[in-house]
Length: 501
Ligand SMILES: Nc1ncnc2c1ncn2[C@@H]1O[C@H](COP(=O)(O)OP(=O)(O)O)[C@@H](O)[C@H]1O
Ligand SMILES: O=P(O)(O)OC[C@H](O)CO
Image 1 (tube, rainbow, N blue to C red):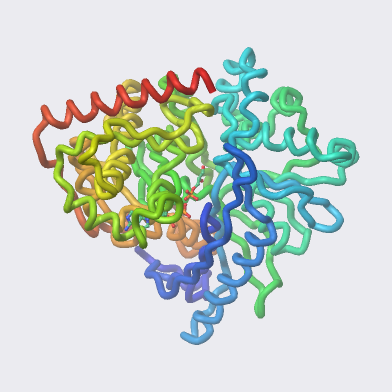
Image 2 (image 1 turned 90 degrees about the vertical axis):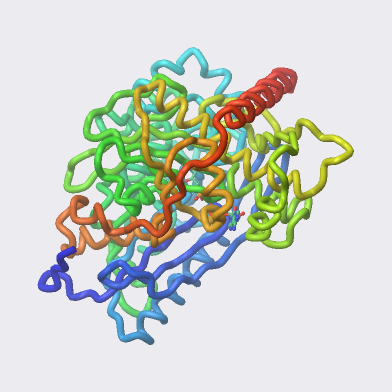
C-alpha cells in the first residue's frame, strides 16, 4: 500500500466504534496496524418485553472517555492524529433538542420491537417501502422508532414540526455533540437504514417522510462515507471527522470486500452478512435487505444483507442471563467437550427473528430437552444456533444467485475457534478469519485515510487485512443435513408460537 505523506502529515488515525454493548476507540498507525484499543461497556435497558434502550449520555460519556484514552496513547508514542472515523451500531434512534443538544428520550435500540403494531398497520405500503429503501416494514429500522417518540412524548410532535427537534442515528448524534452543534450530518450507509432514504436516488424521500409522519426539518444532511463531517475541538487538538459508516458496512470495507460477490459476516451482538453487489441497485426479493455498501468520491456501491438479531448476545445471555458460563470465552472449551449427538436445538429469537423469517413476535425456545441434558449441551446448542442462522442467510443469498465460496468472518465471537470451525462445517464453506479482527474500526480508519488523502480509494485497501486462519469444512454431509432439518423444524415451531403471541 503506497502512503502519501506529502498530503497527509498524520502518523495515525483514531476509529471510534460505537457498538451495541460498548464504545471503543482504536488507534491505528498509517500502515493500519492497531497501536491501542480503548473500550468501555455501558448498560443495556430492557424496560418492557421486546424493548431495548440505551442512555444517550452513557453513549456520549463512553465515547469521550475512550477517544481521550486513544489520543493520550498517541501522544505518549509521539504520534500525530489529525483525522478520525466514526462507525456505529445502526438504526438506533435518537431525538434531541436543537438548542440544548439534550435527548428527549432514551436511544431506542435497533433490537427494540415496540413498533411492531405500527409496522403491521402499514403493511399495505410494504411494496412501496421495499422498492424505495431496499428494507422491510419491520421495527428494526429507525422510521417507526422516530414516529413512536413523536407520538408518545407529550409535546414532541409539535416541537418537531416547529423545527426544534433533530433526529439522528448514533453517528449523527456523536457528530452533533463533537462539533458542539455545528454539524448535523450522517453518511449514506446510516441513512440507508432509516427507512426514510431512497437508495435509488440517494436522497431522503418525501413519500416515506409522509408515510411515517416524520418532519423533514429533523433530518441530517447526507454525505459520502469519506467526507468532511466537521472538526471537533472537544479534545486537546482539533480533529477532522473524515470517515463515517454504519458498523456493518465499515466491516465490509475493513475485510477488503470491495469487489462484487465478496461476502463477510460480522458476529457481534447480532450477525450481519453482507455481500457487495457493485454499483447497480437491484432490490433483493429473497427475504434479504438491499442496502448502501458505501459511497466514496460520489460513487455508490450496494450490498445485499442478511441480518440476524442475536449472535454474541446469546453468549451474553448464557453468561449474564442464565449464568451457565463465567466468561464468553469459556463457551469454546465447553462446546468442544460436548459430544455431537446431544439432540438439543436452541432458537435464540429473544428479540424476534430477522432474516429470512422477519417475525418480530417470535421469542426464544429450546427443543429436545431430556434427563440427560446438561448446561454444557445448552452452551453448545447456543453456539450451533448462530451457525444454523448463518446457513439460512446463505441459502437465501443463493436463491438470489449469490453463492459465496468463502465467508470472511469477524466480530467478537470469532475469537472462538470452535465456533469458526463449526460454522465452516455447517455451511460446508470455507470460513476465513483476518489478522485484524476489529474490521469495523479498520473500515473507519481506511475511510478517514481516503479523506485525508493518504489512500486514493477503496482499490488501495483490498489487501489491507490478510488472512490469519482458514477453517475448511469437515464432517459428514448426511449428519449436517439432518441437523439443518432439525433446526428448520424448531424454527417452524417457534414461528407457530409467534402467531399466538
Ligand atoms: N470467545 C467468545 N466466544 C463466543 N462469543 C464471544 C467470545 N468473545 C466475545 N463473544 C461475544 O461477542 C460479542 C462482542 O462482540 P463485539 O464485536 O464487541 O460486539 P458489539 O460490537 O455488538 O458490541 C458479545 O456478545 C460476546 O458475547
Ligand atoms: O453493535 P453490533 O456490532 O452488533 O451491530 C449492530 C448493527 O449495526 C445493527 O444493525
